[in-house]
Length: 452
Image 1: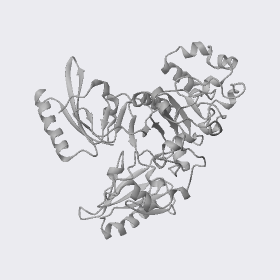
Image 2 (image 1 turned 180 degrees about the horizontal axis):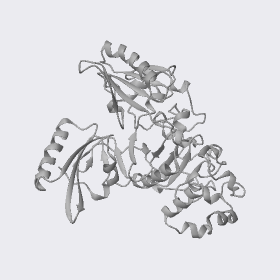
Image 3 (image 1 turned 60 degrees about the horizontal axis):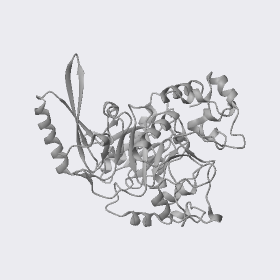
Image 4 (image 1 turned 180 degrees about the vertical axis):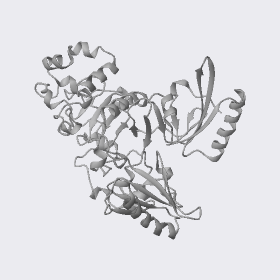
């Protein structure tokens, strides 16, 4: 058991296990909770060692602590609250304080949550198909960190993502809106590709939360059991799983599910719709999919979907080859062989994040220069120019979704694009006075006036 540097508290690796001792005081007396966090890729030896060390730690505190086993992807709210929105789960593992593999040049993280008590960030495969219109993603390169905002994300989610971005990357942050991505963004992900972007994934507050049920006859009779706070790991290859997204019913067939479960699950899905208390349409589509061949409108309902989980040891190149020519689906129409990742300011002059790296990379030729000042924004300071005047009427900014905003408006800084007179009329103070307030007060004011 190796102590973790306090500076990295909240940062976990999927190939390891961790013991967390949480102490709180009630009526002047200390109480303890021992959390045993187990990474998805941790070995049996590591999980066993974690349990043994938990017993020893429990004895050290007089057998008083409450012990809670937490598996990766199933972190309860009281566990997330400890890290105040900065729980980050990386792929790979750490051994004795040293990373087993060098840090990738490009990493992609999915951020889900709206406050310090329910937010967690998980590293996902760094490619376009991992994106989801309902969330915020952080794309970290060796010179910039993009905050990609899906059309269905909320202002609270964007604010939490900005906090996490400061932990993940030391480079400058740029906000990128879905549908307005610069070419460098797609280049870092290896090119454009389809991802979960249906209308349901673009809803800020889905009118119906997806539900997952396990369909099994292991007990001797066929039963459906609901799984709350579900994830990909809950898909049992020995059973059939029913995913209800309201508009569709998915029946996921595990590789070793028996024939009775396969047949009975179809009948159960029909009965489920027929007897649903909300008066469901019995004609709702029932879609049967096989393990390892899940479509995007299925995987999009799961946080941090791992496309390699059932790859049977195949490499990424082998899997890509089996899928055929991805470029036939979508392609980047610009030659980016010499593109660098230096982000540009509104004046279109390169902003150097790291001199050594910038010098090592080839610059674009004058006739190849990529400028996206209307699409990329610095997350830390307001834009100085959005259009000729840099200001828009309040009617174009208040209570507008990301895709309804005028081009050039940073959705995290809507208030900045008001004229000074309208700003004063709405907030009752000048912009200088407003930006001197604590961040949480700024956010509350913006929520109050529909500018968050």
